Image (tube, rainbow, N blue to C red; front, side, top):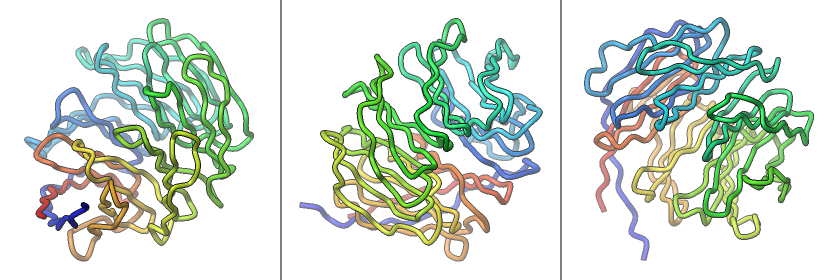
Length: 307
């Protein structure tokens, strides 16, 4: 039986310092550490325990839309628009390697075993070897942007959302295309698998949230979730809820079992953002959530759940 959860929201902090839209945030090596990157090319480390000041990790010559933390090597992989990947050793704060893989924007970076997967604006999906930083495979099945990536290690699959409105699913080992889903009526900006890998969630520029059965990628549910584009989706550490964020300036809290809306976090009621919210993190640090925005700031809230 599903009992409706009551959610209360407490604003914790705002982080400022970026000089342009903050496009992405990435979890760090500890629950209270995260990284941000923006249109100003700055990559910054933040500490939720002392939110007054960030530490500059790298300064890149172009906008950064994608970051990926590799805990086993303590590296931060940075996707620099129009230039490729830059790899920072977080112990020394120095760049250890870089590789030019595309002239296009890099929209997402994910890893599985020894493979780094990179989604780019020219529609290319590139597989890079973690150790050698050499290109293992380049996959191009669309002339439209590859925007987002989600990995399902249980089924050995990787889902990629494209600007041609489709989701394509590939085999993680053979890199072969296994499913093509006519998913949305506009670009697919957000993908995430549920923690039990029974569902794939997708969010689009068409403002719809869709839920797909991973057994055969049939549609389970379609929800008009926001007024404008859905930019990111992320589950809670417990797996009981998930968040969506949008160009409509709001964050929404959803029940993971029923897919019912539980709470709206916005500017008027919760000191939210005044422009598009681009990425989210739901941390293990006191149930705090982190959001970054086109308004150049990063916000932190704590969520409290009562049943």
